[in-house]
Image (tube, rainbow, N blue to C red):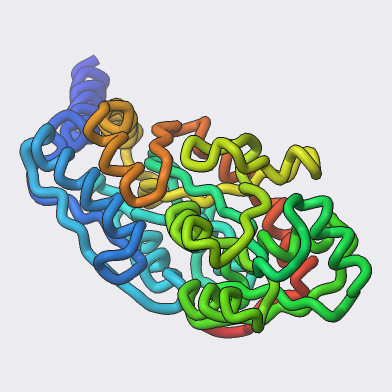
Length: 323
């Protein structure tokens, strides 16, 4: 009987010890790993959230930029970090869905991470050179079909979200176009304006500026419905039902991070991104606040994966063997 009591006491002690990190978290600074340089969209969104978490949770939430290999260096770092609630990954669609389709990586986007919360999303805008006599997506498709193989589309690089979104649309519309990759969206847009390429998918905020200057013709948005910023521009889904692509920026934890910590973080961020000040800050950088969390965010990532695999096939992408 004494042995049983001692054993039960030991087990209770272990259970209590295991619960302490979640109950007292955070008791020292927390790192949010960003896979891009400071100043970009992912970095800015993460810093907006980090400032709030620092204020409400009483510890510093530090943004750390680890760049390289399309964000896979940062992803691998977080995947291998201790699941203690002090290291999180401020990821975008690219690191979880796209990069593993292009290069061999040492992490699994679903198995090695716990999706915490989707902070914000960003649809893409389909733009063409204004010399093309098309004002609707259907007119452009007809124009391109009459010139199969003669038109080009640009993107910020092979395997980038703009490339794969374009490849999906080209395949869905039954077109033959040549992909021209650039080192970033800015040179792709410069060549669209110059007429070297005829089509580019770009971020909403950027495309609005070109559209207002009459440098491009905007035909559609990649989200499943029309956007707040461009209410007069149809969604591509209005022509091709089911076409729905939005990039996301979200927070992920290393697999095995205590559920209590993950839930608390998800709750704080979900609440924050619904506040007027946060909505304002996020919209200023061309994104839309989300706040979906935990299982719902996990389901979103799982649901998207087959679409991106199909996009890579449509783009003719073959995974490289090294980073």
